[in-house]
Length: 214
Image (cartoon, rainbow, N blue to C red):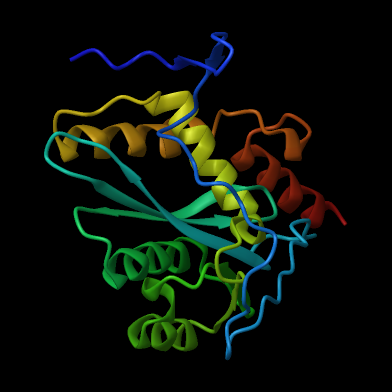
């Protein structure tokens, strides 16, 4: 099955590119969570790994229905340290991504986690897991995607560079494509402007090499 073209016509009849499946316009306002503050406050530059993680959920279209994808990104090198995929957008989707991130990284100090106010992140089970793993949550203002812009940017790149508006035949096919993008391309090979054009895995390795040489 061929994917649909990544172009469309604007109101003047000119061809323009489309990315992903389309994206809702961002809002600059929004109400903060009553209990969990927006601690990150768009300060996306951090000075060490495992200081701040960000997490979000997106969806991939298949002819079997949606495949939902949750990721956890370390803000230092912008690498994806945890991910999970499921046919359902439940809190288990987020719990699995967080568990992968924790067991991969094994942080010795408290980690801050930024997310939106989705029910998957505000659920009792998610908050209980964060407390158990010594992870302190912070949340975007409601309806404000810019508060989690780095995670949004990753999903935009995933859909632009890998999916290209394709509708996969099966969820397994979509799952394999996402896995390949994260583990075989994005983390080890994709040059990232935030990292001075160095891939996330390499950029983080450079941090630890410098630390050992001091």
